[in-house]
Length: 366
Image (cartoon, rainbow, N blue to C red; front, side, top):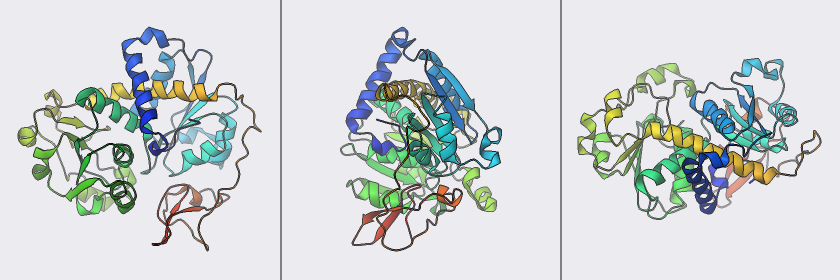
């Protein structure tokens, strides 16, 4: 492992190994108290965050390391026009490992290609959030004891919910997993996820709009916030923001051992009364996220040991473009639209159907 941009980069064996380390950290915290002594984590957060940023910082401090960075992109040289690639190469001269959150999709990928220090994607727009998925997986393992054979319901914003996309990708590799997607038509799970992850892996799934109807069959209910910051049309957000609200009354038809997850922050999609239900596990997710980030930092620094850091350490080769002809990514939030010097590149997903995907943000080419 050189960095972590997409949860799909990790095999089941690597996921299990990270969870095993996290479990050992929980059981033996003193054993890891100086594991990162003399190491520095840079937190580059161009987008607001509470849990993810503080979780990374707490993880590094509890491993005995130090933290540098910023929590607001307006305090960085980005306001002067510095590219993500240049920012990554500069910060890579100061830090041993980087956690980056960015509102532009594909930004951590660009940083990873231009920096010798390992880069962790701490969330890029509505694209990916792999370390939240690590928190989700550890919570599921600790609460349910398995991944195989579970029916997982995802409710709310499934279109822009990067945590949903990442968790689906991870769980799709386990046997006999079933998905229930609960959302209004406007916020349905993206077609690429259905085609490339779910159908490709032979996952049984259902799309519906009723949480009440779906509830009795679920082993896990993954609630999500309708994210106002992802909408270009604010009127549409106002219309959809209260589509699903989980209350104690709605849980009457749920399994007694179902668990409720939420990546947080919540607004009003889960009633505060639900917090007192034994099935509510979203604050356990927060704590588990810290332990999984500790395990990930250890693993990445172990892989980077001995590489050294220098400004000339990384000069990335141009991305190979599998497309025939001139294509431009149609995703307005893709980093190729904000950093024009990037060479647009696509990878071929299906030759017969001529399906291409952007190598930066993974949007389908039209």
